[in-house]
Image 1: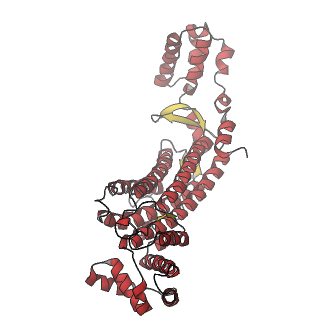
Image 2: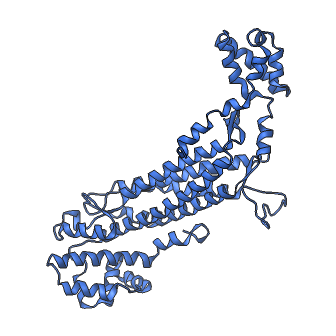
Length: 435
């Protein structure tokens, strides 16, 4: 995490004070249930809450203790004992460090995902608004980067909306998968702690019960979670790259907002560069890159090792903070995106009507020509149009073989632009619903 690509609310989830607060709550809730079960005195459980509920944990003091103990959970428990007093001996009864660490990570990832889902909701709202704004704005569709057939700019955005709507569903599913609680003790057998404690802590912390945790929550859950973040990042990159291409000088159909006083280049004062979407492409690479170590964390030794720990201390905050920032940034880009319909029209007309070639091809086959002959007739006129900058319809009208199959009025009808947009409403209803 670096401040340049961080937002405060997400960063707060990963701060030491937040982590220690979650540790305390897990320990205190577990002690409450142990008191109910008669394992520890009820007075001790009450004292633990009374003395530490509103405490601000001394991060520097915990770090100082850890330098001696070389164990973060023991360092925290030692500091907690300094706050609570003798009753602290009843904390952590029958528990192991992973019970605290893994359950805390579940809480943090669940909270982080709530923010990410809210981010996606904001992005969806921005995309929807701009999609309806340009629902019928004609533009050329491209395949392999080459002019293909007309679409509308609204359809481009509708595609992005549907993609991020799927991302939202994936995040909801990822949250459900990651939000589990493990309070099962050493090697996960509950030998020294009743399973009722786990159920109680899970309910208090808003988590589900991990069915079998060995000593750690199985890391296939985390692998799926970070893979999901990687997919969301890839979808951000797809939209960012589309905008970057459309902003190229030779295309110039859309452009990132360029604010007053903004500078595009230290050397060339005329530059207006797509810096935000280029930045998003880089951030997407980072988030995707964190999915691989998460998958490698799945294969731990026996009931537990800590090879996953150092990885998760980094990718947990970094992936969620980076994706949170990226979602907010792409939302801002979409919200303020400058769209140039006149340039879309100019580019659409650039090749003299060649985007109607398929319509002519199909009409010739319907008129009795073989597909091979139809393709040959259309392609030779298309190539002449392409190479000499001529008008496609004019060339077709002058072709005797074409004229033998289609009348002038029939050919001209093939160049009706509205033909390409007759199902835009259908697609919008599929994406956005009947409303």
